[in-house]
Amino acid sequence: MGLLFRGIVWFGLYVAFALAPLTVAMLADPIVADRGFALELGVAFGFIAYALISAEFALVSRLRAASEPFGTDSLMQFHRYMGIAALVFVCAHPLAAVPERLELADFNPLQGGLAARAGAIAFWLLLLLVAASLLRGRLRFAYEGWQLMHRLLAVLIALAMLGHVLAVDRYTSVLPVRVVTVVCVAGFLLLLLDYRGLRLLVLARRPWEIAWNRDEGGDTRTLSVRPVGHRGFEFAPGQFAWIATGRSPLTSEQHPMSISSSAERLPDNSLEFSIKAFGDWSRETIPALLPGTRVWIDGPFGAFTLDRAPGQGFVLIAGGIGVTPFRSMLLTMRDRGDRRPVILLYAARDWSRVVFRTELEALAREIDLRLVWVFEEPEPDWQGERGYINAAMLERYLPAPRDHHQYFVCGPIAMMDEIEELLARAGIPRGHIHSERFNVV
Ligand SMILES: Cc1cc2nc3c(=O)[nH]c(=O)nc-3n(C[C@H](O)[C@H](O)[C@H](O)COP(=O)(O)OP(=O)(O)OC[C@H]3O[C@@H](n4cnc5c(N)ncnc54)[C@H](O)[C@@H]3O)c2cc1C
Image 1: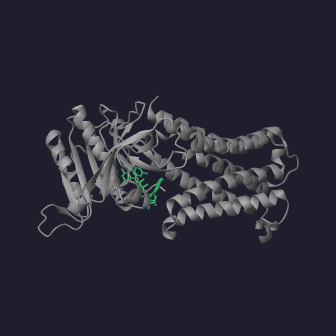
Image 2: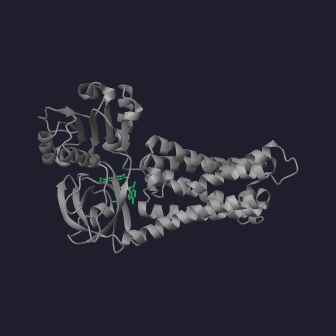
Image 3: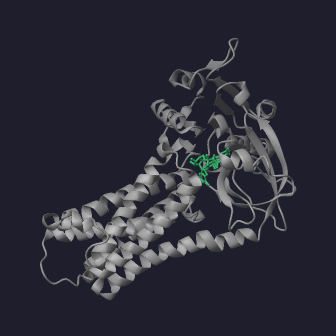
């Protein structure tokens, strides 16, 4: 089945799920009295919010089949937007339904009957969850603590929502509506069980070990990992995997990393990851991983790959550590004898921040690769490109015919937003621009 078709099917399923409780409630319609349009509209908002929140976890639960057509970072963005949309529907639910009777006390989780209390709890927890996610960077909230809180709040919200709809007992007084509302939340909890339980048990049975751990300069280390007692997995160049380090995958930290080695299998089925020191894990745990240390790898994931973007040639635009998926793409092209032309525009502060320089220069002699270094703060005698990548620079390097090439961008978020826009303005069809955001959460 083609990716586009699969994408349409998954999106259709998502919309059907989002409307399922509302549709079943409308069909079952146990309420005889005419309660007025505003009240019914408010109830409809409530049902939509209920389904959107229940579906949120599915978007980020590493369901490979669902993430393939869209890419993990797009699903993550969608998860964000739908979380905000759910909050808007939750706010609109009482406002539309009973505006004249609404009092501040109705939002007090310690007052009223079970339905009111559960509704108020779900509302405040959802507000807290959305605010903490939007402000995480500004509040300098550590990722791991935030992630734990996010999951805990999500489970509490799901249970409070379920308590609210069942206790209101109007539409849910009939069996079909009860069933659909319970199934929504049960699906959410089952996915969580799979994600935090079963999947980790499977991972624990397929360990990997560090083969070597190399300093690449530019605050970056490359880890080579090989499977122990199994054959590892195949991947497409540009895809990523989750690395778990620690005593077991059940207790460990997991981080997403692009696979930086060739997708043509090495004899020992090993993989490489090139990791820049950002925070505690990458700065302290990674350098301490000695050969023989056990790690666990969950992958491959992602849609950021040459293999899904047929073109006459490629333009790769990297900012800093965003070069890692491109290393994999270029090594794979070399190993496959792929002679299509590639331009790599690699932006960094200066030479000291560049990783894989020698390797990339060697690749430029082996495949049809043109390297363009763009330095933000170059040495005074630097003759090449300087500053940020801009429209004039793209004009100098974009190959013709532009729409016969595929364009891949990976780097800091601000740079990616800018370059996606510049490429679109330069006439590149949006479908030919592919991006991978490392900072998806
Ligand atoms: C698809 C993808 C591919 C990536 N590939 C690479 C790569 O090839 N090389 C590389 O150096 N970095 C890569 N990253 C970024 C990398 O995952 C983070 O830099 C790393 O997790 C930082 O962890 P830390 O604890 O050292 O730093 P922290 O200071 O704790 O985190 C820095 C930021 O990284 C993100 N982050 C941290 N932990 C996680 C996590 N468990 N899951 C998701 N995001 C997290 C958060 O936004 C956080 O604010 C990739 C990210 C994604 C999403």
